[in-house]
Amino acid sequence: MGFTPHVITVVVGEVVIPFIIMYSFLIVRHCNKNNVIFATGAKSSVSRAVEDIDWDSFTVKGTCQEIEKHNLWLTSAPDPATVRLEEVLEKALLMVQNSQKNYFYKCDQLKSIRQDLTVQRIQNQLTAKVYETHARLAFDVGDLPEYNQCQSQLQSLYAEGIEGCHMDFAAYNLLCVILDFSNNRDHVSSMSR
Image (cartoon, rainbow, N blue to C red; front, side, top):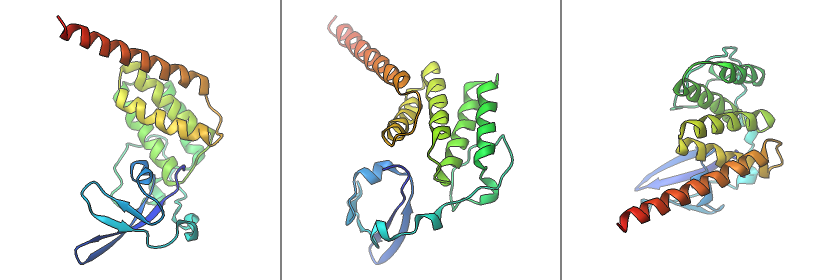
């Protein structure tokens, strides 16, 4: 699975719109090589076989040397001049880990690092360290949606054989299950009073 992009063509009325869906696991889980059914009922078909696409031609190689960079939503193809090199991303991760700034700043920086890794299709120990760092920070402040997003990516990375703190995150998952069970039990007992 990983970060493999998928090419689809969406037909809306008479308009044909080609898309490259990169890193969207929600859509990837609901598609096969022949079609995608969207929640709205629109139907699209893959314009060509996924195996026939040269994914390297879509991969961005960053040239940016800035360590600190705010996270911005991509609204167009990423500009290599704004994407950091892997060596710079390592320094950016160290900067976040050593920072005394608040969670929101660290979260913004980590999302920016994650985005730069993703658009360059980098999946290695650095990627795992970034997601592990972000997951731990999110867990510590109780940001469970962000934690779950990181944990989902970590499971994919670990399944691909990328080394990381597998046991630590198995324990975090167990804690989440226990806390969720405990919270649900408390809600049920308070409703019965």
